Image (cartoon, rainbow, N blue to C red; front, side):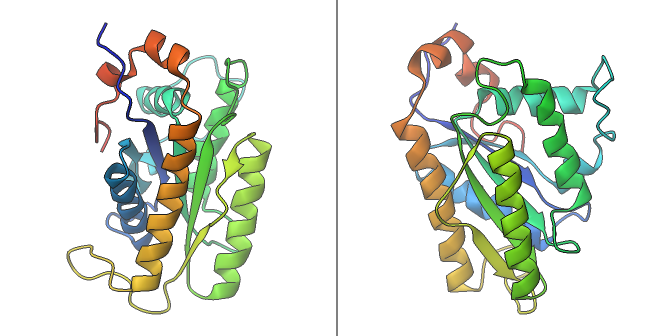
Length: 211
């Protein structure tokens, strides 16, 4: 079994079914900031989430994609969630992915217990962004996670990214960086060394392993 890395694992979950969406780009930039702050990352973007079957709590078997998601969250030291604002709440594909975390209810750390969760919302207008952020924070609380003090709200009414995916709005870029650093800071402070050493996470989740 390889020696445990001191770098925490931050798992990104979010996006839309459209490849290259603003939400996907925001999530990846936040993960980049987490890596710059010393974390390893794994990303489950919108295309990945859109391929998950509808969550069925009574089902006894899960498909490979949902197994990968659950394994990553189980090993995560922190989580970054990103969703567009759809009708005042998180998108269906993101909510469906979060519903799968019900399978972690019997874990030593059930659901998102003991992990900081950074919330990122993209929406056409500040009202939708704010209401969606509140909804996302409520979900994180229900899953026993710790929402970071700052939640990033990105207004897509203006231009945010260039053709190469770089953020052209300094305020939006700063929000994503701060949220990511709050997640990694919490993860560094509350690293679970005994559990991590037993799991062999470095072998299973190297940097960018699921991206």
